[in-house]
Length: 107
Image (cartoon, rainbow, N blue to C red; front, side, top):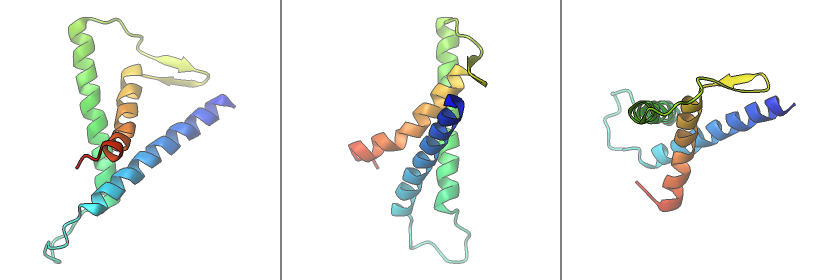
């Protein structure tokens, strides 16, 4: 039961992060662009930004852990879920990033 609740919570957090990113990208759309050039949709841009942010944070965490020679478990298992702690941390940071942008008014 807790496993499904955790999966639903993670999914809702990712969808909320994508929604905030879409809101940000829609606000910054340039309406002066020529109409004959294809423009990426705000949803595709938001998903691309989420994946890029998570990837950058993951690479940074891997380098920090490697440099400091910190011994971390390769997998953490909760009920039937097993995940990489560095990858989950990177996704978590990428998910909460637009919340901080919204709170602190970044561009």
